Structures are given as C-alpha cells and as structure tokens.
Length: 231
Ligand SMILES: Nc1nc2[nH]cc(C(=O)O)c2c(=O)[nH]1
Ligand code: SF4
Ligand SMILES: [Mg+2]
Image 1 (cartoon, protein in one colour):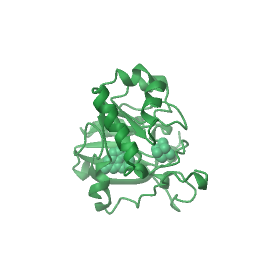
Image 2 (cartoon, helix red, strand yellow):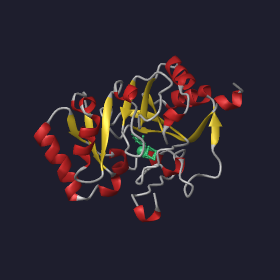
Image 3 (cartoon, rainbow, N blue to C red):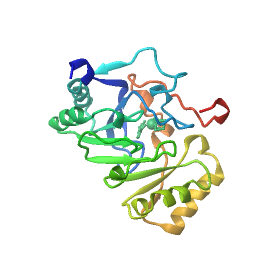
C-alpha cells in the first residue's frame, strides 16, 4: 500500500478526560478520525461527515505521528473515536500506541469490522446501521442513547442477551433531550427496576467544557435531531 493511503484522516486530536462510561474522569487523549457513513439525526460530531459542517481541509497523519502525540500529551490512555473509526484499518495505530505503553480504547457504533487490537471497546449502537454480531460479542461496555421513552426497551429487545447479560450498559440521554424529563425519568425507572447491568449515564465532559480547553480541539457541531432538515 502506498504510504499516503496508510495515513489516517484526522478531524481533531486533543487531551481531555474521559467524559463517559466506566473510565469516566480519567486523563485521556482523543483521536477523532474523519468520516462516518452512519448519519445519526442528532450526531454530536457532524464535523466528521456532514456536508454543512466538514472543515475545508482534513489532515492525514501516520500511526507513528498520532501515537507520538498521544504519548507526549501525558494522558493515561488513548480513545480512538470519530466519526466511525472502524471504517479505517486501525491495526498500525493500535500497534504504535501499544509500543508506547498506552491503553487503547475504541468508541464505535459496532457496524463495521474492527481492524486493530483494543483493550477496551465502548459500543454505542445506532438504528441507522446496526452493529455486527462479532462486535457485540467483544464489547467491554454498551452505551444506549435514549432519544425517547421507548428507546431503552427497543434496544434491549433488539440486542437481547448481548445487553441483558453484559457487564455494563450505560443509558445516556441523547444530548438535545438532556432536559426532557420524560427521557430522564425513563432512564431512572429502568435502572431502579432492573438494576445491574444498567447504569444511568451522561456526557459529563460537556458540563465541564473539558475538551475545548485544549486549543487543538475543534468546535463541536451537534445536529440536534432536526428531522425537518432531513438529517
Ligand atoms: N471528554 C470526552 N469524552 C468522550 N468520550 C467519548 C467521546 C466521543 O466523542 O466519542 C468523548 C468526547 O468527545 N469527549
Ligand atoms: S453519532 Fe457517531 S455514528 Fe452517529 S453519525 Fe455521529 S459520528 Fe456517526
Ligand atoms: Mg463526543
């Protein structure tokens, strides 16, 4: 493969702390790769794919460059996110990160084959493109996005034992619904009724504005579920 093709398209890289999930609050270096064919109506990273939000230029970086930057940041581990990072071959990147002794975490919809070795996989399924069974079987934690009062039951029905027997299943209000009391109550009720493995979750970094403190982060581009605009 020509060297240029091995370079990954990068939307942004920044040092922050993990704002979600089991590793909440830990110092983490985020590599947000460009591109996502899933197209969720409420995507909070539309700059990675949406024609109205993509930047004029997208840098391509090698696995060595990305891993060197991650190490230099002093973060505890690396989160590879997107976009949908699994549309890219991540093998070289995870190899280079491991060589530097850092943990490799992946944030994915699970809809694409995962190429690369990860220590931790967060799978957040999307109706627009359902996860592959092979990925459900190797998920470390699930994150279900709760868009309305029916969301949780619908996901639990769709994913069956993969979620009901998982070690951790986070229930996150979709961000534009974070003040919708019916959505929040549906999460509270589910956790109180079912208990383990379900846990109420939130995107805590957004409350802290943690990511924007790194000047290398890009302004976020949330779509906010505007169906009238067709996305
Ligand atoms: N601080 C912080 N934590 C995160 N955890 C998952 C994120 C993501 O966008 O994938 C994310 C993010 O964008 N920022
Ligand atoms: S939320 Fe994630 S999977 Fe959905 S469109 Fe945005 S980047 Fe893609
Ligand atoms: Mg995010």
